[in-house]
Image 1 (tube, rainbow, N blue to C red):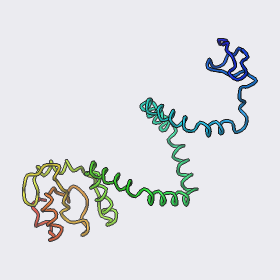
Image 2 (image 1 turned 30 degrees about the horizontal axis):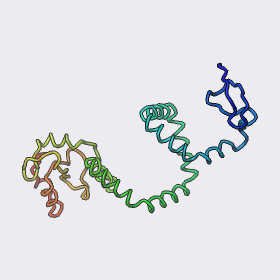
Image 3 (image 1 turned 90 degrees about the vertical axis):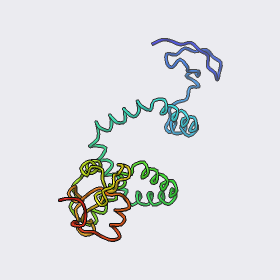
Image 4 (image 1 turned 180 degrees about the vertical axis):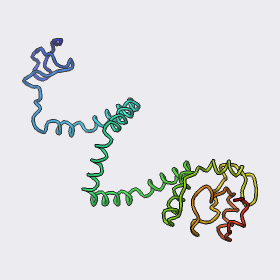
Length: 212
């Protein structure tokens, strides 16, 4: 290890050391790591550490992301167990904290929710349908909107109008509220106006254009 020669910035006496090159204090004036030293140092340099930490995270975002991901998957079971254990032990504190957070961040949460719903319309519709299905307790068989669109050849099955995929709505032939399944054999594509009219007027499978 190299030996460095420098002068103490506090007493002005020259000294030699084999530690960090940037060291400026001799052994007499060098701070000792007494109990609580690290905590006092962090409190005294809190702003500098925050600025440094933010700059470091921005400069090494990809490396940190990869490192965290690798660490998570390497210790996934242990981390999940710790998380579940902590949540069960601090359930009341978590509920109280969540209630306070929801109350103090209403506008932010609403704006985030609206932006997500606008950018992920298919997922939003799917979640609403899934929630309705769970509530009604009917049969659910997963399906993709684009598969139903291709099967029905891109036409509204109530008025036969050609539809763009972005304007398609999923119509349950037998409504979920009447016990109909949320499954490919009970859904068809429909334009918004026909689907809305059906909701108000009501139809039965024999009145639709979809052949069984």
